[in-house]
Image (tube, rainbow, N blue to C red; front, top):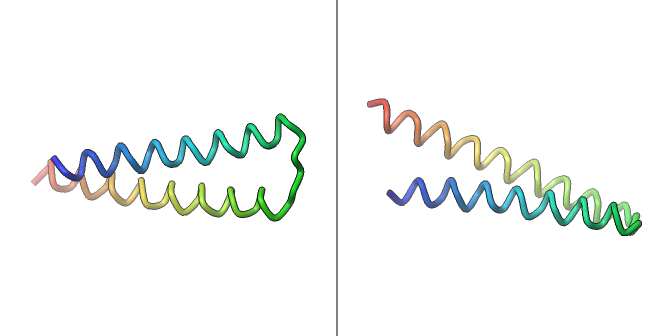
Length: 62
């Protein structure tokens, strides 16, 4: 199902942005602008993933 693929891509995207932020933190790259942008992307992607998951669950239920 197409929605399953979208959910998987959204979750992988969240993981990728989270990993990029953690790698930057571990390396000591403390650029506040980059860190803030990564956090904004992570929150937006988590929201999109959550919406897709709720939509998928509602479609599977009905």
